[in-house]
Image 1 (tube, one colour):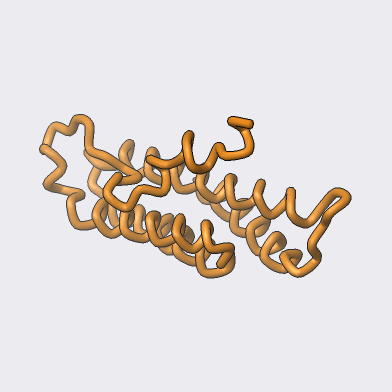
Image 2: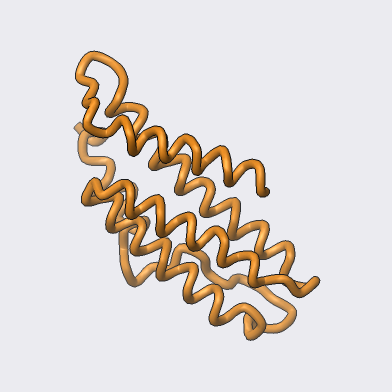
Length: 132
């Protein structure tokens, strides 16, 4: 029974608007270098999560893609590792959407309505992996 309601229990923090997707844990510069970019990336990731929850996959993917390329603005040598970590986090979110769409478009109860979104998720995920 617990697995049926996993989104409300296990992932309640994941979809919580007050919870930042990317939190500053430690930084030699106290996060002042990336504050604006981190806030923008977090906002886009939260928007993507809300859209994903409402099954608005196309716009959710667009928000993640935008957040992914916002990490390019973190180009100072001290921020390159953080930018890589941000891209990894965004890619993991994209993988979650891709997996969700894969389940919906295959198997006994496949829904062909989501086929184009699945194809978009597949190409976006491939693009993320090529860039990283």
